[in-house]
Image 1 (cartoon, rainbow, N blue to C red):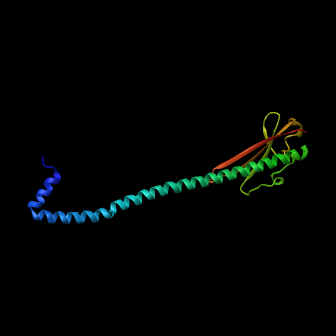
Image 2 (cartoon, rainbow, N blue to C red; image 1 turned 90 degrees about the vertical axis):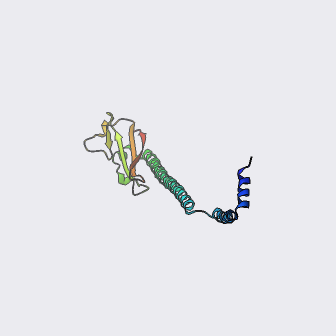
Image 3 (cartoon, rainbow, N blue to C red; image 1 turned 135 degrees about the vertical axis):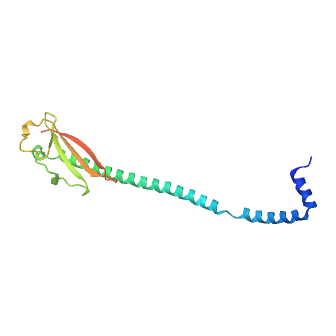
Amino acid sequence: MIGYEDSCILLRAICPELRAMDMRDASSTTSAEQGMTLVEIMTAAGLIGVAFLFILGAVLSVNETRATVQQQARAISELSSVTESLRSVAFTEILELTDADIALLAPDQDLTVECFTTDGEAVPLPLPADVSPGALPNPLEVRVTVTWNGPRGRMMSRSASVLLVR
């Protein structure tokens, strides 16, 4: 039985025109194999572009997360500072406490200080005129809340409470 390669050799020997055509095909095949086609280059560029977009999205996500964590850490630090300072203030001074008495770490933060009556109702400080200090329980729960806008404009907040004895 004669194989494909044997039949090609036999045909080239019989017909010299096939030999010349085979030589042209061999030279063009060699040069085509040496380079890349435009389709291959465009496909590679597209894949690289898609990979770049995924990497860029990951970097932006990590950057946003970092900013959120920094803001939360700043708020927790502020809460810790305020609650510690409340422990050293006299009870009557706490009832007259205003937000201006407490310095914030950042201008974009909003601070709320409130206490709770015996009914569990939240009352902002300084104490309103219609609430008497006698209506407040002993120990008094004082809650401090820091609110700010997150990286995407969402309102974020952290709270801490402290019990103060008269």
